Length: 468
Ligand code: SAH
Image 1 (cartoon, helix red, strand yellow):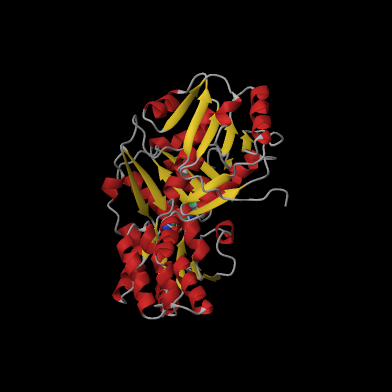
Image 2: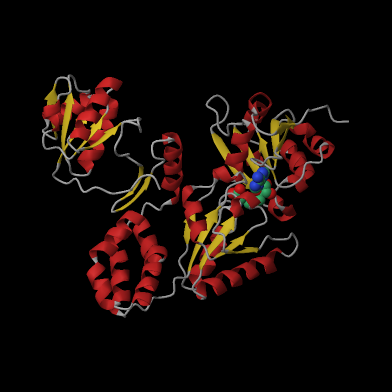
């Protein structure tokens, strides 16, 4: 290891920033956050720096760098755009044994300032010894998204009660188990939901009982989005990283599953058409079994759990058994497929409303209000409709929707094998047969669907020949 990492306590200590521009501004801000007494030396200050000086947050040393500025400072950051000035700062500082950093110049620097992920009091610092600052920044972004924002308050809580924790759990193994529970269990969830009093109480109760932890079982209904793993939310990713068991649907893509905690048990509960009801009962049974065994269960569904995802039923079932589940929304197929096909679902000039509906089996087709669906100035986004295209088309037209209404049928939306078929309603069943369109596919009907032809940007846009 070339560099020796350290976290410096600068509270109350004078430090110097040479330079008065944007970079100096950033450095001064970070030093102020650390409680340092910041002096900024430059002929002129940026607007923000000038305001801080006027407000007394920093001291302005006016003019070009002079060695006297280094008197009694503990460290210095040179942030001018003049290399020889920076060099001068570095060499004068070196003579006086003052730590110096020259921004973006590892050769002239005695110390490096890392990229930081701030979950104070938890701080993660990333350094490439100045060799690849861009890489360090990218890593920081990645870690930023993976580290729960609630970790900061959690560590603060643990810090506040450290003596009490030691007293209650003098043995190391017990203390270790307690910290494991603290960092992964209900206290973290409570803090994430901004319930800090409850979080503290939960922790103290466990301490009072000599570290006997209540079961950590939990269920989160999570929307996995339509397939492209980039469309997963950060919250979904976090929950997947903490899961013990993942009960997932067939529709959830392999790439999304690959992002979950490696040693989580994955159970495919994909429903098969035909035995729908027994399947749902079986899912309920599994949910209950695993959560009662104290495991963190993620119920992972394609798209959004509350859009044709039976999330409502599962939530109600769990509630009947005294279990409150959390819900992480996902990007639903209509929204995702529309975006990836270049079809805006609403458009100021054409349509002011969108209707999401399912055409799953004759049962649900029978219960639809067809007169309403024939209304021209509304976009229809139809889920689970590929098997019903004939009935769907005939009924819409019979109720007055024009056979010339544009449609876009998006198969495997957002996945590498996405195909988009676009044409007019009258030709829909024949065209879909011609191209052997299969599930999962989402059907968009309405004037906006025509935009798929000009604005599609992802996957394959199928050539449309007039149907035979
Ligand atoms: N909860 C899901 C919908 C489940 S119903 C959501 O919010 O998206 C299953 C139907 O969703 C499929 O039959 C299909 O119509 C649609 N669907 C889901 N993912 C899709 C995808 N990647 N491309 C096209 N349609 C999709």
